[in-house]
Picture (cartoon, rainbow, N blue to C red):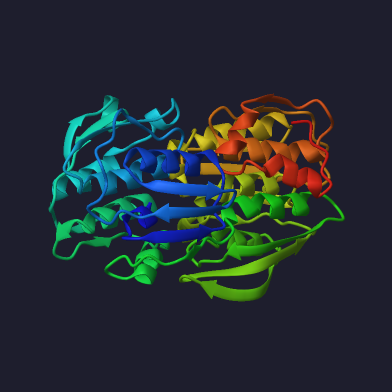
Length: 391
């Protein structure tokens, strides 16, 4: 998305092939940006800040909240009207948290669904009003949307948030400079996806997994800190930095897990991985408490409810709370075949897949295909590592 706003060719390597990325690529094409894709490589022919074209037809963001929210920031600075839509899951996710600051900057909101949800019809303008936004939540998507709109504002746009959210946008803007110079971008491996491979190694006795060139940005490594709190050390080898993003090879072996309390800043920094943490906690010795994670209820699904239902179906004692859950772990407990209702939520599907590897045969599935939104090669990768999956 940022490469499209550069004035010239941006060569991207390490780009994921998930449906969320493909939705973004498709939308940029509708806005007049030519992208040549070959596997994980892409050549983005940037059109500059003022080169986007009014699209014909609506922009379909699929299941990607990141695409919709960040694209709203870009569209706020475009002098034309646009309609954005998404699938059923995305249409239930809150957009007011982004629309509110963008409307203060000058984005005109012409139409929304119930409670400021998609579909959305907006009209941008140029220039926008600069602002200092006091965000009520720590959200990289909100922050990024405002900063992208700030590229079209007169004066300095600032975002203050109550906690540190992911900072990939700031790092990329700093790397490309104030003129958004077209430069190569090497995307590190996604820790949120790598976490499931690390988790597989921790669940299956005798396993060791090594994952190369995974992003180790401090705002993304909350999951590794959670594992440390549960008694597991993930080794980092070959640490290096490219285009402002640190990365390393991660190595973990099967080992004993212990229960832990996950809340506050640690819960925020590991939010997307908390369903996986709950899954691992089912095999830890002792009780694990996850708190301060109410944001999980407005993801691709209500991840607190879905995680609890899934773990219960495998025979794991778990208590649902408004802001989290309590898991009674026992590595000696014999699981039973579960039922995984993953419709629309890739992380629930991947958690269910990991549990099914250590449960008796017979797990039933709904929506297993949802893994393709972020990690299309998930099943093939696990099988290549020796896993037996009936998925």
